[in-house]
Amino acid sequence: MGPLRIQGRRAYDPPSDDDGMRVLVDRLWPRGLRKDELDLTAWDKDVAPSTELRRALHHEGLAYEEFARRYRAELDSPAGRAALQALRERADGHDLTLLTATKPLERSAVPILIDLLPEGAQGHP
Image (cartoon, rainbow, N blue to C red; front, side):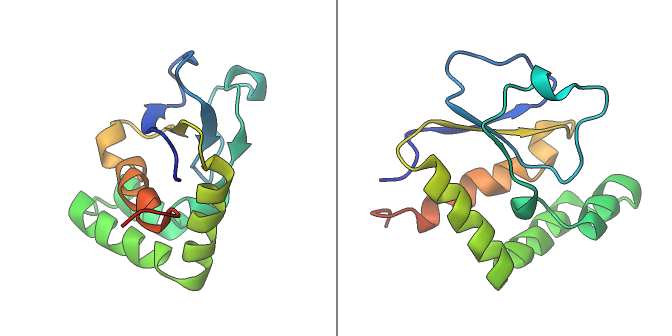
């Protein structure tokens, strides 16, 4: 069985009682936050977009649709598949909140991860 519920939130939002496991899915630590402020279960840099892809999206004006296509390709590599599987295994049977500093949340890696994580979950069609 995969996670009961997967949601995304900004790292700057205060923790909530319904977060379950809280996993930061950015390669960089959120600017201006202390480590104790996030109440993290884990910081999973391996599942985050590559530095090059993140820069292209945020600094070079890459269209989000192209970002999503390239990020899915990164996650389809052997290292990407292993990172996704490790996150699935960590969250198995638990509610999961994926955290990012990206604003807006809808233009981050989080929606893509929410879409992909259940696909490889044990028992998922």
